[in-house]
Amino acid sequence: MLLEVENKLHYLCTYSRANFMKRNIFLWLFIAYMGSFFAPALPAQEIARAKEVIDSLCAPRMHGRGYVGKGDRKAADFIYKEFQKIGLLPFKENYYQFFKMSANTFPARLSMQVGKARLQVGKDFIVNPIARAGKGRGKIWRFDTLLLKDKNAQELFLKTDMRKRVAVLTEKEFHELLALPKKVIEKIYEAHAILQLSPKKLTASVAPESSSHPYFEMRQVTFDSLTAPYLPKQPKIKYRLDAILEKNYTSQNIIGYLEGTAEPDSLLVFTAHYDHLGRMGRDCYFAGANDNAAGVAMLLELAHYFKANPPRYSVAFMAFGGEEMGLLGSKHYTEYPLFPLERIKFLVNLDLVGTGNEGATVVNGTIYKKRFNELLAINEARQYLPKINARAQAANSDHYFFWLNKVPCFFIYGLGGISAYHDIYDKPETLPLTKFKEIFGLVKDFAEAMK
Ligand SMILES: [Zn+2]
Image (cartoon, rainbow, N blue to C red; front, side):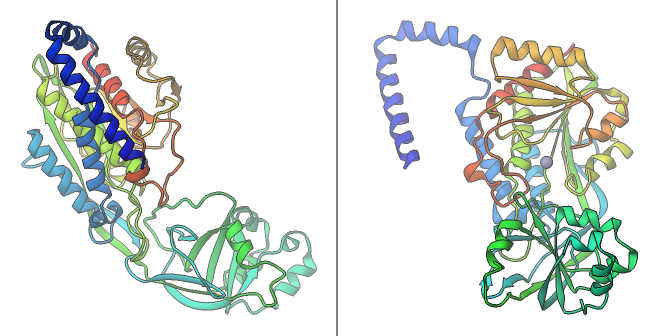
């Protein structure tokens, strides 16, 4: 409905603009001339192109850009072709840089039932990233805080047969287990599956390893509603999970550059990770629109821009894999750089740039103060974002290993807007891109003004 109104408005505006132009051609030329000083950071057709990139990277055939169905490789191939179309140069024979990693994956069957209720993966429950495969049906064993204080309760508990049970604990209770005697902890882990209850939203993740149990997560409110104490009989939990630990998986970075016109030996570097959380069974995948299809779309827009406006310094564009698994692609790059890291004049990492309603945060802003002030001055002059915060060093995205290797760098992420993050709700349909063109403008101006 909203879209329809927008289209109508758009039509009305273009119609009246065309008539206005015919009647007032001199006035229009003057406005166009003045307008060139205040050109929008990113024209509408480029925003449409960025949206197409985000849609492609989030499509089901990319499997959430994880390690089921070679989703990461499909996304990498897509970015490779975009690099080719733009005309970026490779540092080696092509844009690829391969690296090995390990990944726990959930490629096929996945179901959970509490009593008669069939639960929906992603919405009602998720799989903990270190879960191993398994199937079973069992009574619920709910952790009792009495175990923490009462020796008698512990003795009694040691007599319980846990082998046919699903152990259910909150996140907090999991941490408290450490205070218990070893034999009590071991007894809990005799349960054939674990269900962890979360007070907040479900936040998925990935892991390079697998544990001893099928391991699920559910919101506390969901669990409470399914197991209400007034029910005549407590329901059993039934589950089935296929999991494969891929121990020697090959993933890749995609890296290209444009040669500088005046000082080609110095490089500005833009980075964005393209991987995401992949698939959780056959019915669920994590599209990762804000994290980080939007960052890749911005990386490509920067490449388009600098191809059309040849830069003073050389500019490298790096799309990293394995970020969610622990910054693996960028770590690999800093161990096997394609040119000496000392030649990087500055690096900007883009991750979560699809919002920005409330401005942006710059990691390392308090460290590289002069550069941060340059960024603030540009923002002040162009009024891109309502607010830019400086933050100290943080190991939260792909700039980190560069920073450890003394490469001056920022990591910029947007604030406000949607709160979808590492869940099924981070999808293109609801990604606002409110300040996408402004963040693009800010980063582009910052790079161009760099001395
Ligand atoms: Zn990310």
